[in-house]
Every structure is written in structure tokens, then in C-alpha cells.
Length: 188
Image 1 (cartoon, rainbow, N blue to C red):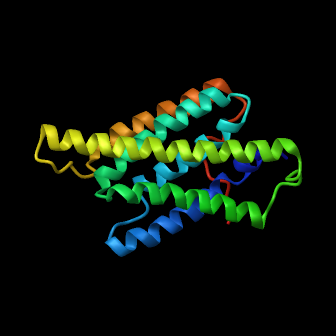
Image 2: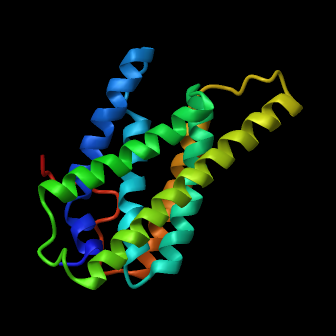
């Protein structure tokens, strides 16, 4: 089993663990880790596997766009600049721990090692894109307005939801046989 399939098979489990780790952090701030944030996290996880599959270039482009959107969402959520980076680093930790707990059968194969390095690069790219989006949006909030970005409004959720849907549809268009994007697998 290659890393792409391993990620697809465990996307729901990864998402639940990541949500749980973020929820612990959010509870310290009094925020709720479910709702639109949970939907957003589920989508981000589903965008990872295509970055390692047959449609790698398109997958990486969507990952970059989605993590850029996540950085903007972090600003609306009221996170500090480093917190969006920390949240994406939590994802890396969740995936690595799960890889240690339940490694693919072919983990010694050269292709697996290559995919693991590619996954690491994709996660790094996501951190960079989210951080840049956060910083850019904060700059423009200061330049164009009160300096305080609006919170997560229904309009913000609706627009971001539309963008996530378009990312998912693009991946589905590339690989119509894979209807697992954005779904949970029921593993715990």
C-alpha cells in the first residue's frame, strides 16, 4: 500500500485526531473546535492524498489554495500569527504518530520513503501558505480598516465553504472514481 492510499484509508481517523488536538487548544481559549472548523479540517485532510497520487501537480495546487484559505480563516478565528502554524504542525504530528502506530506494509520500499519526503514538503508548503495568507490579510485589515478583521461570520463561512467545494469538485473531476474527498471513514 503506498502512502497515498494509506492517507485515503485513514483520512477520517486523521481528521478526528487533528480536530481533537485543536479542540484542546480551542477550549483553552473558550472556542468551539467543531462546526465550520471541523468541516474545514476534514476537507484539508482529504486534499492531502492527491498530492501524492497520479494527479500530484493538481493536488498540490489545491493544497496550496486550501491552506492559504486556512490562514485567512485563522485570522477570522482570532488566532495569533503563530497559532495557524502550530495547528498545521499538529497535523504533521498526528500523521507521524499514526504512521508509527499503523505503518503501511511497504514502509521499507523506496517509493514509500520518497512519498514520505514529498508529504513532508507538502505539509511545509501548507504551513508557509497559511502563514503568508494570515500575514497578508492582517496587513490589509490594518491598511483598509480598523485593524481588526471581522470574525467568522455566516458570510465568511459561506464564501469559504464555496471555495472548499470548488477545490473538492476539481479533485473529483480529475479522479471521478474517487468519491472519498471530504468524507470520514468511521475509523477511530
